[in-house]
Length: 585
Image (cartoon, rainbow, N blue to C red; front, side, top):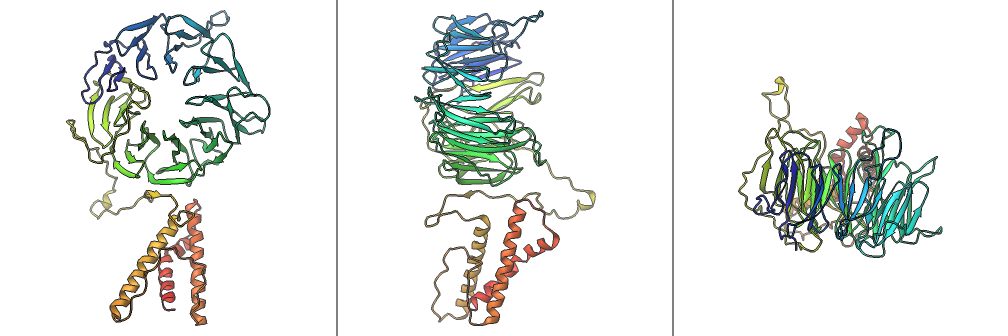
């Protein structure tokens, strides 16, 4: 069995070494430190029991459990390593080279049997992208994309192609996780005016016009990312173009599609325009989180009907990370953002903590679902390299800073199989830590000399949207819109104030029943018996309806004229006037 606490592997200018996980954080004896700067790659097996690395001379494999070396292969230029799911095969990849006289190069993708140490098969794999064969969880099938078709092999016999999936110019494919029956999602880019499409197949049923389980075609796709959920019941497809022809975004244009194995498909409607930064499935396979929209970005959880379940509002974020157990979600803003994180309890939609990991280039959940790793690595950033271990409540439990003349290149947790660490009860109280907390320096906004002795006005470029539960309330089919909710609250507050004022004036009168919490219908008819008053009420409702339409246009990004903005500002006064007229009926 692997150690009960996940190890941490560190690769940098100080060499390659391992650190014991929480709570000790001391250098581990499982792996003797390899000093030197020649290590280009390392990897763990899926269950964390085997460890392989290339030190610039050989590829070595050790057992983490008994600390013994298993194999050593003479592959000095290896830059990619991958274990098969059941630790039967090690795949290695070296950059493809041709000889000076133009003859074809030697095979650069090797597959080694880890029991015998012999090479099962060698392939020529020119591109680093998608270099590694994909295996099913039990290794009964494996697949490679070769010359725009997918070749399938069975039981790690790479000498015989057991099956082929041939479509015109298959660009990418993804095998489904989990047990049989195995499914495969394939992407074919569009050409000559034809749309791109993603199709789902069940292995080995590839022949015939109705063989596909599901099909989704779409335009505006230069590349796609396909994400299976854990139960292999649905795929999320992020389709993106390199250039946004409208000029709205420097990052191109993205759309999010949902495809289920039962044939259902849909475009996920995102309420805010702009890039899609990240999409993540919960391990429960029943919901997913999308981070999208121009900054400040929105984050929303959707169910399998692609209906919004919970909206986290807006904030400086571009990534979403579910814990391995699926009970905690971290929304974070890394890269060109300040590193602010929001840690949420997924079940109760409660905010747990808001730590800040400045200058972070890497984030990873610990397999125990309790701890978080953030790191600043080269070459993304060459200064202030180091890593931190956090508890999800916001406490920094361990911190390591690389010396000023050194660099950190890679750091990662030792993986564990699902179920080794069950989900624990969530705590909201920050756990104690011996590491002193560092308050991030908040840069003050520049103020011109003429304003420096005057009071500060709180003006914001963007109005922040608060988190909002989007689940339909009992007795209603649809969740209320933000405007309807706002108007409803205003209406109820005013009614309550009026009723209070009336009861103060006439205490002997019986109290009127409390108003029901239903949004006021602006177009509803009411008669007072006085034609003049009815006419005024009708005109007021007409004006309020026009204001609602203007607000919807403004929300969609349309630039309003000055007189239209003035109309919107009069909404409160009009509501008050309408209230007075209606209460006088």
